[in-house]
Amino acid sequence: MPINFIPNDPLASEPSMRNPRQQNRRPNRPAGRATFVLTGAVPEAVLPVGTPGFLFWQCREAALAAVETWEGLAGKLTRWARSTPSRRRLALFQNAGTGPDPQEFLNAFYDGQSVQFFEFTGGGKTTFSGASTDVVAHEVGHGLLDSIRPDLWSSNFIEVGAFHEAFGDSIAMLTALADAPTRQTLLGLPGALNAANFLEATAEDLSDGRLRAIGPNDPASQPRHALNTFQWQLPAFLPSGGPPATLAREPHSFARVFTGCLWDTLRNIFAGLAAQDSAALLAAAQTTGRLLVAGARTAPEAARFFQSVGRAMILADQQMNQGANRMAIRNAFTAHNVALGSTVMLAPTAALAGAAPKIAATTAALSAATRRDLGLRLGAAPRAQVLVTPMNIAGERVAHAAHQREVPLGKLHKSLKGVVALATESVLVGAVRGAAALLGAMPDSTSTIDEVTSFVETLLAHDHLALAPAKGAAAVSRRTTHAVTVQRGKKVLSRVGFFCG
Image (cartoon, rainbow, N blue to C red; front, top):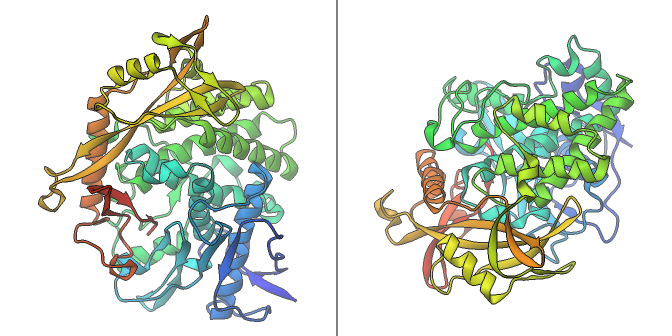
């Protein structure tokens, strides 16, 4: 029995991409794979748009399409990062509720335990965020990135949060490109990938709802576009927010810089292929997606995370494709003012005390002398823990050493007195002539503090930080992404989810 499915978004600019089409539902996930826990199931049928039954099948199909696309790029998905039991099941709520506040209910959410979508009625129209394949794939994208980089969940760097949002948009685009009719439609448009189109624009219906309910100055009142000319700037010098045309340090806004880099990488790779048909576009999308996944897996967490991922993508391309796409990646990032210089990432820059690190497939160790030297160079607190893990970057095994700097937040708000934000400062350590050597750059503590401070200021400006102690999940606003928790007797800023209104 077929179902009705909207392949892109209810307000996509191309009619065939916004109108429901009939197709057979995807099968349930195989045993041993990560899956979704669904609620409100109805028998499969061709159900009218706007009905609860349609929304169930639409949301399920979009979520499974995103995971299917991911597995074509990254291999079998067997675990989510935080969900229970056994991290194999992530709850999916196609309609987690409705209410009068457009800031809360023109929204979608990933909190590690679930992906949630909402309903809002305003201006004579009801918007279901779970009816958009764009929106569903974006939220699932947060969970997919979390499955390979759970450490990024707790990062308090602006660019890491923005990358999480850009990754969600990228998964939405790659999910669309995995669909043959979607590719054919895109290639039939004037300008195809080089002109504004339904595929590089995301969440048109949700944006329309926010435009009608909140107004044109709401940052999300226009779709985000991957085809853009935004230029990277130091986030601390950008405003905390602004209307859609403004580049701000708010994660969804700043994410457009990286999404632009990825879209341009795709365009460059596709333009270099002999054929310019649907099969070639699929090949270009898969190459781009695999490089994105490889970059996300191995990029060291840093304040300049866009650059870190771009460098890791070039190194991955060297290993996977003999560097065939090096210029496609470099030119794409340069067009958005993100300088890569990928060879710098693994270049020795300083000699460290002690012998070369011991690196195995799953463990890495530094000598006591190297640990002491690194602690002094990083300005780490006495007895601060330095976590050492192995990392394989473009076939080269290195040791990744990281410690967490505590950034006091009391000066930002009276309710944050005694609260700290943790910032990961990391370095790569390799071997030169049997001795330990620093690879790449050493973090600067002043820059770390500035970055984290700007990040928390942005949370406060957008009301994404719960200042009052939360008493259970119900007490946390759907706009909240962060709250204060107590860890080992210390009050710490902690992420509770990704809000994507």
